[in-house]
Structure formats: structure tokens, C-alpha cells
Amino acid sequence: MPSKRVVALFSGGLDSILSVKWMQKLGFTVIPVFFSAPYFPSAKAALSAQDNDIDLRIIDISKKHLEMLKNPRYGYGKNFNPCIDCHAQMIQFAGDLLAEYDASFIITGEVLGQRPMSQNRKSLQIVSEISSYGDLLVRPLCQQHLPDTLPIREQWVDKNDLLSFSGRSRKPQIQLAKELDITLYPTPGGGCLLTNVNYSLRLADLLQYSEGTNRELELLKYGRHFRLSNQLKLVLGRFDTENEVLYEGFPGSVLIRAKDSLGPWGILEGDITDPDTIQLAANIVLSYTNKASYEEAVCYGKDFEYTINAHKVPRESLRQYIITEDKEL
Ligand code: SF4
Image: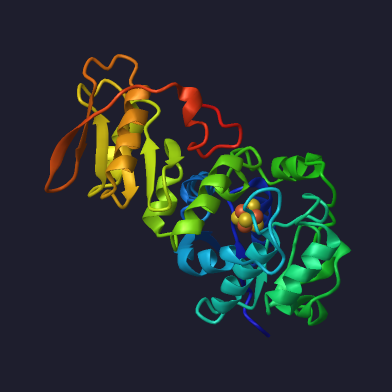
């Protein structure tokens, strides 16, 4: 008889909490895993796990996930979210951990029909097929609706003990949470930045010019982003705390700000040797510094500092450079 140990894909959301708790109730030892990357950080899942006394493993999959993200076989959702390929890859990674954790199969918190694109019957089937571990996959919250996989055929888990949730309503999950005494769980959505339109636009822009390092992907979360040339981008803090994040969180960056500094701080990403582009960056910085008292900006890095004569330009004229959906300036 295989071990009563399972690896769980854990997002931190209610469905994944329920899936873990339900299998624990059935007597399984559950090893929950969160796969992290800069665009799906682990903090929310870690907090959710802590709140619910779940012992979470966090594993960084940035490199392989980014490779997949550049060319997903099943394409993207509404934004830069390749949900089918992403789910399949995570199941594959979970499957690769089975031997290490002496576990027999994988569970997820998916619910048939909950998300119209990525959790319909066809998508769930494709995910099972392309993950290469489809026959070792059990979806405890909706398995009653799905074809039997090896753990069910072999009676490692009794299908009658599994659930039959389906559809978009979350009432059954909320009811089950009450029954299992689960009171702390995050509101749905918001965990994955690949579903965020502005992050997606910045990411699409980045990947046109760069391989996409973790640092660059992290930087996409903050500030206003301006594409100044193929070689140079400007990221401007929108408020004081964001200035601090840019300054403290990205050490070694080339910074630019108005000389009197009462305004946004910017990071220059890329080649800073072209004077015209640097001039443009300086003008943008000044245009966002409401109370600039000098017509000068300062650009500085680890070993240098120089002043640039700059002037404000109408924000309207910057629309062509800013990377956002609504071009809000
Ligand atoms: S929402 Fe994000 S993390 Fe979830 S499957 Fe889609 S791409 Fe992957």
C-alpha cells in the first residue's frame, strides 16, 4: 500500500486551504507547497498557512516558470497569465517532489467551473495530460465530477470521501470552511500579478528588451514606468514610501532626481550613455517634481554623480513613453 502522504499545491486561497484540511480530515499527511516567482510572491500564502496552522514549503521556480511564460503552449488569458501551462507546470513540479517527500499523489484546490477559462472541464483535462502526472492527480473539492485517476482506481483514497463542488458560487466552500472551523482566509484573487493589466504591460515591454532577471521582474511592481528607448527605461516613485523602496530595495541602481529632491526618485534601467535619452529622463523627473526650485536634475550611481540642466514638459507629451493601460499620467 502506498504511503498516506500527499503533496498539495497551495495558493493560500480558501480552496487550497479546504483541500489540505479535507485530506487531513481523511487521515492523510499533507505536504503543502507554494511555488513562488517575483510575480506570485509567497507572503500572502505564507500568512494564510500560518493562520491555518499549515506547515508550508516555499519553492522558487522563477527561472523555469519564466522560460515557459515567454512561449506558453496554450497561450495567455486576458493578460500575461498562461494559466493552463502554469497549472500544468506546477503539477509537474509537485509530481517531481513525490519521491522526495515519500508521497503517493498530488492534490490541488481546483473546482470545476470556478474559473471559466482555466478551470473548465477541458482545461482541467489538458492540465492533467500535459503535466505528465495527470494519473497521480486528485482534486478533492470536485473529484466526484472527474475521471478516476490511479489513487482512486487503486483505492488509495475512497472516491466517496471526495467532494463534488462545481461552478462559480463560493457558498459551498464557505459552508465547508465553517464546518472545518476555518475562519481566516484571504478574499479571492489578487495573488498573481500576471493577471494584473499594468504589470502585464510592463512585463511584455521588459521581455522585448531583456531576458527578465528576478530584479527586473521585482522592479515591475513599483512606480511609473517609462520606455525611453530600446536601451533605457525610467522607473519613477509615485510617493515617498515608493521612493524609499526604489532606493533601498534596488541597491546599485543608477538614480535620478530633481536637484532639490522634493519629488519622485527614479531608477534608470539600461544604457545611460546616450545624452539625449538622459536629457529626456531628467525632463520627465522634473515634470513630476511639483515644487522643483532648480531647473536641474542629478544623476548618480556608485562611483559618479553629475548634474543635468532640465526643464518641465507638459505631461501630455509623455503619454508616448509611459507603460500603462490607460496611459494615465
Ligand atoms: S493565475 Fe497566475 S499563478 Fe494562477 S495559474 Fe494563472 S498564471 Fe499561474
